[in-house]
Structures are given as structure tokens and as C-alpha cells.
Image 1 (cartoon, rainbow, N blue to C red):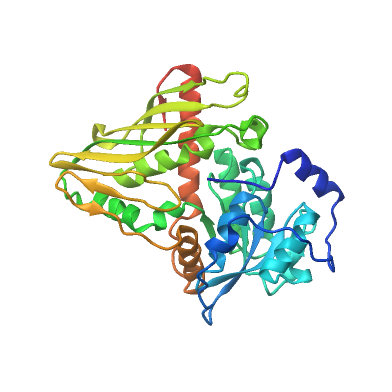
Image 2: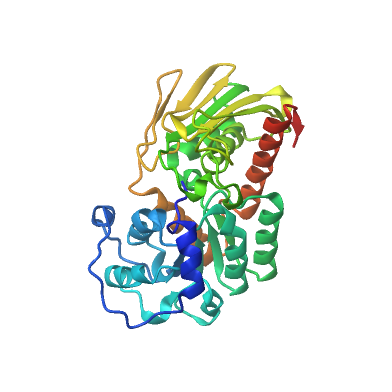
Length: 375
């Protein structure tokens, strides 16, 4: 899930008018549910990286910031926002220094700030490329929420900017850091239930909003981007293969007055090497959350497979998949921080996000044309 920094119109207005603010009086606002998320604090280790969150909407506010209080190898040291009224709230709760508060015009100044090692992009998808590139140009490492960007070209531009500036790039696919998911990924190689015959993955929730950036094409809205990358990524990691073709795809909506520009529901069929078929579906109008793999000698599934907690599943021979972790976002960020500190491979690099967006574009093309599309 990628939630963002308020309505786009307000954000743009703030970005035009807001300059870096310091010395603001402390406000009286509070975070909903934040205390429950950060109730278990983990002492920071000697080697820890300072993280600046770009965009202070729901996902940063209620999930990433509290999770950073539970990490061992990174810490929240900075913020970038177009909403000055949020600044005193964040400073009061997380002790963020005045000099570590930025807006969208002066984000490049982070280059001179030793308190910040990583810039985490948590904005509407349509803004990811612009600000991930700006982040890379500061010489700081870049973490970018999923979906990576709107197009292959945008994804490639982010990868190139990070390579040029010699910084690491990670995409926020938290599920690949989750232990039950990692077991499924391992089984793609070991095949304990025989050759994989076919797979199914579906991710959806009911979104009742009628005026949100996820309804805007130019901002990367639509179910296929927001939720669709979950089943796409799952079909890829559960099979251990890359699809060669979108066999068919279809967009549907039961609310055409709301979903004028983007898809409400999308169904798609992917073909993998050896004729393995992956069926996928995503929606803003349904409740779906499952991944199932059928093999020659049995099956296994996760249901739910992409919730913030409670990932669990079973197998045809009665095995349970229910290894829980305290906080998925904390695990993701600690893994990525350690990769930077130890100079090791990033678990989910930019190329992973690029592959999914390439498939998203092929699905959209197939849904419009009614034809199969080679990937």
C-alpha cells in the first residue's frame, strides 16, 4: 500500500508557498494509533543510518515512522513535507531537529546534512521518479515505495540516477522480507511439491474514496498500480520465473462515475516459461488476499499473503505457514540498512520494481487492445 501526503492540490499549493521552517511553536495535534505501533522501542545499534521520510501521509505517519522506532540499524532523523502544519507534530513526537526539516524546493540541501544517510520516497506514484532522482543527486541512498514509478522509462531513469551517484536503491516490497513469503520464494527453487503447474494471486480492498490521487491517471492511480503489483510480484517470486506474455487482461468497473480515468478492477493471465500459467486479479472494489501454487504433487497457499500482519498459510499435506514477525516495515528497513552498512546486495533493488512496471504496462495494453502482449 502506498499512501501519500494529502490531496495533490493542497500539496502542490504548499510546495509553491512553503519555505523551510524552523523554530515553529509546538502544535497540539497527535498521531492516531502511533503510540500502539511504537510501544516496543528497540535500542539503536552503534551502526545505524539516518532516514528522512519524503511525504508525511498515512503510510509515513502510521506505519513507517513508528516502525523506525523499532529498528536496530536505522532511525528517523529528517522529514520532507509540503505541509508546514505537520512539522511541529513530527518534531515533538520524534525529536527531529530544525535543520533536518525540508520542503520540496530545498530537498537538494540534504546533500550537506550528515544526519541523513537515506531518503525514503513516500509520495504519489506519479511523483516517484522526480523525487527519487533528486534524492539520488544528493548522494544519499534511496528507498522508494512501490509501485516504483508509472513507466519503464521512469524506472530506468531512477536506476540510472542512483548508479551515476553511486548510491543504493531499494524498492519497498515489504513482503519479500516477510518469513512466510521467503519460504514460498525458497520453494520456487526446491519444488517440494513437484513441478509448478499453475499459480493464482489476488489482492484487493474496497476503497470508498471519490476524490483521491489514486483516481488520477497522471499520478499513477488505478488498482493495477497500487494493488496490482502485489499479485504480479507474487506470481514472479512464487514461480521463480519471469513471464513471457500477457495472455489476456480485462479492466472492469462497477462505479464508472468514479473510475473515469483508471481501472477499478483488473484481471490478467500471465504465461511463464514451460507453459506455466499465472492468474492474477486486483481491485479497489473487492476483498481479495491470496496466493496459491499448484504443483504436480500438491499445493500450498498464503491467505492473507500481503497484509501488514498475520500472514499465514497451509499446504496440501498439512504444514502451517505462520511465522510472524513484530513489524514488517521495521524488518524491511533494517534489512535495507544492513545491506548499505555491510556493502551487500539489496534484497529488492530497482530492477525488481522495473520488471513489475514492465508487466503492468503490458497488462494495460492487453486490456485495451484485447490482444496477447509479449513481455
